[in-house]
Image 1 (cartoon, rainbow, N blue to C red):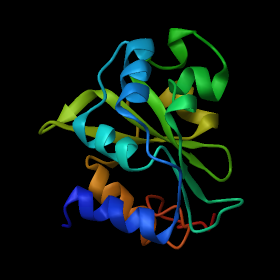
Image 2 (cartoon, rainbow, N blue to C red; image 1 turned 180 degrees about the horizontal axis):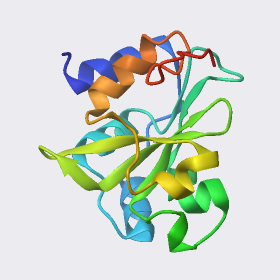
Image 3 (tube, rainbow, N blue to C red; image 1 turned 60 degrees about the vertical axis):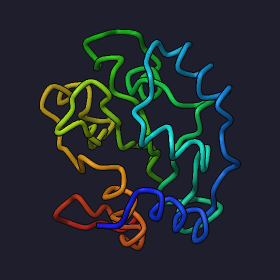
Length: 160
């Protein structure tokens, strides 16, 4: 597997990145959110504060910039109701149809954070046992970049 910095450089050179976030912007977001971003996520935002994949408009995948990064329950459902999911799962990558790939900053596997299928219609009832898409940011970005815009984690491999 490629190193994360190489994967992010490939993303930045081949897709539609936003400007990098400053250390100050990252720290301000962390203070507002009450968490420290994982090192790999911090590196991503330092290299690109969001990114649209494949197309500049109507992108099938968009990494959410820090200014819009929030918990899935607040972003997807505009609710603070804890039954709709914990504050530790963030709506990290917006999918073309309005669903998200969630970043779970609470659950770790070998110091890596889980990336989850945050399907709007069912996430509120499935967040306790979600479908894990990846446990690595480098792997997730590579899967997206090689997906041709498909839902690569679903058996149907539907096109976005």
